[in-house]
Image 1 (cartoon, rainbow, N blue to C red):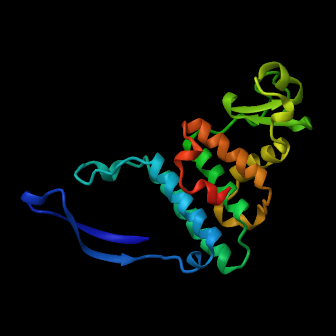
Image 2 (image 1 turned 120 degrees about the horizontal axis):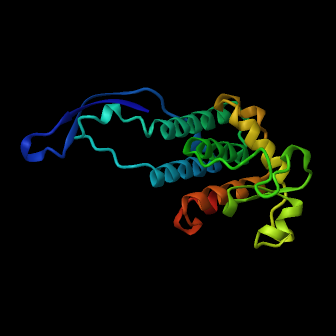
Image 3 (image 1 turned 60 degrees about the vertical axis):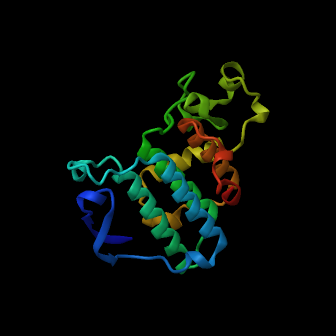
Length: 214
């Protein structure tokens, strides 16, 4: 992370900015030595690059635009605590991937319905077998899956209850408490990525880093 004091170019090169002064606030040192952590950081950056907008340094009102602060907060926390986990030797790829995806889902406002089944409105907490269905933006109970969803029950991924608990837990959780998550279930990572990509209209084959993190 850098603090940079920019200087605008002359009239002939007004699109060219130079750095009058710059200072390094923070840099990672351990991520480069762990290939899984490095791939994960690359995925973070690729994802944010695809969903963020171009900054216009000529916009006089840009300092008042706070629309991207949330995404920057998710990205900066994700990288900082990824480094922190390596320093403390508690790094778990699935945990950090799930945490990043969940925080991004919350920030983008595409959180699924986590209170009741989207069809029959039964309380999800009282059900044993539930499924997250990206196409319907929420959880579906065992009774409704065959009737209302064009996917066979046996083709749906397991772990819906664990996923629901994960959504509710991470929603109130700070990034710095990542060690309390201890998620090692790779299947949950797949389901979360599928949900995020469906909501954003992304295809996995358009991401260079996906094969290295899932």
